Length: 435
Image (cartoon, rainbow, N blue to C red; front, side):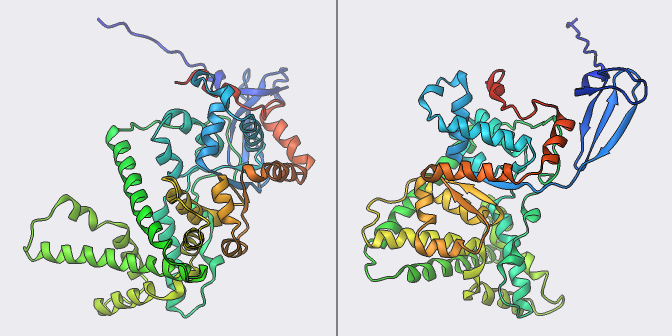
């Protein structure tokens, strides 16, 4: 018979520091923390099991998004087993220490995203996931397609009622960042490691390579456009977004009709195309048009909207187009002599998608330079997000310090009361027991 093992769980193990005197049985150092809820915490006595809930005040956490290179270098800065600690700039150790403390002090949250996950597929996946989930406390932005749909949905509703495009009405962080990120965190964080298949990694690499080759071709074309202004490039790129949605939907419908009429056998790609981003987006927009109305007229109204210049001011398209317009303009004037690297496409999409929902964003030096390019900076000036990189690293530490200074003494006292005196110590041992 196989050997059996018995695991004995003592309920006392779930009661932790800080311990105080029990208000009921008066036993010293027995009344500890059982759990932290979103707006309260529970203490329980290890001797008499007396429990009581205590209310917690609302929080005002700042949302700080960290580019993948920051996650990667912070991971290397504390991961002894990787053997790269001494090769990494010490600034990343300081970054980790400050960010980890401030997440634990309930002052900031650093959400992760699909961009972190995708770029972590290339190497050290588990270690990188451990880092970004630690600082995000497992709060994750919705994928870019969903965020695009939310913004266009809201703007389309305004369009139908002849309201002007108000970007503020399109941006509600709670719509795109689910979970309890704005509330108090429990001491215990549980995450799940999903199985990553080589096929997924190969697919991601292939997509990156194809995208890079396409960007190289476009870049070569930009170099010949000597007379276009940055605004010309912006108009051209921004208008292509709605046109691409229309084209994708039309291609899907053409295949659907052919299959329905028996003109062709359906393929796996045909099945997937019915639920592609363009189809989902237009199906969502149809909800706001009259039921029973002529389907052709409803689709026509959506197509008219998607081809209009109104989409130029939808945040996700406006920021994306402004950044690429800056790259195109620099290329046409000789300011850029080589195509953007393989990660730039993801970085531009990430900034265009997530920046409007953040209080601050930390990017690499190249992206920082682009976001401070005149036309791009003007577009970003309407949003609250502050932009940081290694270029202005001292400003970033100053920004974090300002958050701490503006936090009340009572808040810090509450932190100690709930979590204990040393709760904000950085988790240097994160990788001691991990692969």
